[in-house]
Amino acid sequence: MKSRCPFEVEPVSARYKVDGNDLLKTQKHLVREGFMIQKYGLFVMLTVVLSMWSAQVSFSGIVSGEGANQGLGQKTTDGTKNLPGSGLERTHAFIEVAEKSKDWSVRKKAFDNLRNSVIDPRNQDQKIQVRLAKLALDTDSQVSREASRVLMHFRGNPQALIALKMAIKQQKDDVTRGHMLSTVLTNTSRNKSEIPYFKEYLIHDPSLYVQVMAAGILGGLDDNSGTEICKQVLSLSPSESIAMLQRQAVVSAGNIADPVLLLVLQGIVKSGKPSLARSHAFDAINNIEFKLKLSKSEKLAYLKQALGRPESKRWARMTIQSMKDSEASALLSGGRK
Image (cartoon, helix red, strand yellow):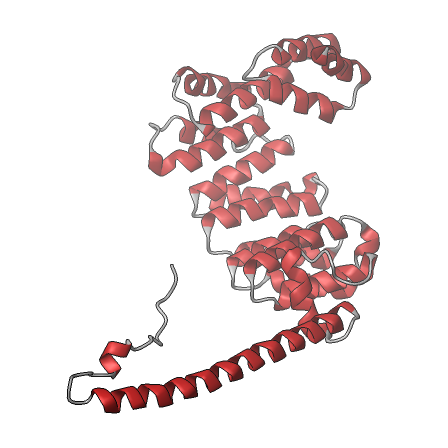
């Protein structure tokens, strides 16, 4: 909502109290002031022209590489695509924007570009890692989260891993803390040696949401320790207050893929109430049933059936793409014909 301008133009009727006795004097006053307004108008026009010329010169300086600090802000308004350099040099330019810009949309875009850049190890160095670690420990939860999502790609870097764990520990927002756990999973390349770390959050974190997130991450590491917590959450009566929690529990249940969870997931599907939890429940059930198929032929048959079901088609496609198997990929080719 726009704030009201504190400088309001006073109406002429309020400034000139015209009556029959003072008409002549008022007319002379208006003529004199009209002349002043005309002079002032010329001054304003000259000022505008000079401002436009100045802006053009400044813009030319930015394009030619002059005025680096001012140009940095100008160039990031369109997504930082015009920043100079490439590779490592460009990555340094991105982090400069991420650190200094006061516009969050520009800052967010810089973090996105940083993440895409550092996926390539050639665009990583110690200076960037140290600066990202500092941002990851920022008290602003948005900055901390975005910096951590970049830092997680410094795989196998001990300092990066320490910074990520510290950032998660200091994060006060439950949902953000829960989702930031996945940065450790990515940074360690899903190393099962981190299972005890995630179990600490499953058992001791005060937030049920974080516990459910940890349960799902552990499930992806073939550890079913979080089965019971997911079952308890999914057994609760659905309500708006726990909708997000139950949706995450469904996703975590799919990662755990424990047959014990099938019954409660099927109950969510049979409820018939359209919701994100119900949509994710189809995927979770598919994950569990697919995991129970032992032979390759059984798995391929299941995928073929799933492709024919509207609620399971997306899951089947994603699963086939992740398998990178020629026979499974052939099912997709047949489905498009």
